Length: 202
Image (tube, rainbow, N blue to C red; front, side, top):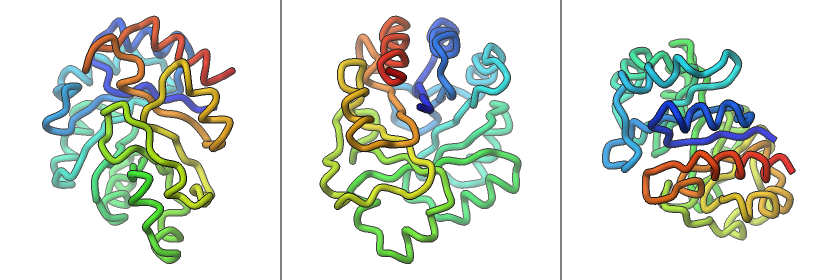
């Protein structure tokens, strides 16, 4: 089970995630998020991440040139686009040397037609609730049983107490959490991070 801990802002929480076995740590660059950090802080935090663990920058409907510039400044390994960005932006990021993820709300993914889904089939996809980072689970029924055929992450409303059950039911490639490991909005709790990773792997 691939596990991504997102919205990290401190050395302590990055260490908790990596030491507990996370596959990826996420840094948010989307304006308006309570988890927003600068490229300079992400660069500092990324220096403590062992080789082989992805450092993921999360962007939402930002100009692709700005995304590329920030991702290079922060020395990210991976960029996650979390808005309505086209496949061309993913291709641009790969050309720049980054791994990629593309997030969809579950209703938006469920509403794609067959040709649109086919275009995204080979990409790493994240399925989230309508409002990312709000801690609200999506309604899996909107997928009509048709989850992405390739690598995909389950996100939205996950926490240590429910991640094992939801992952068993939907069988994603991995899980992504942010608000579910916070003691208050935007503030990560190292013990909740450890508990989440343990539960996800169970």
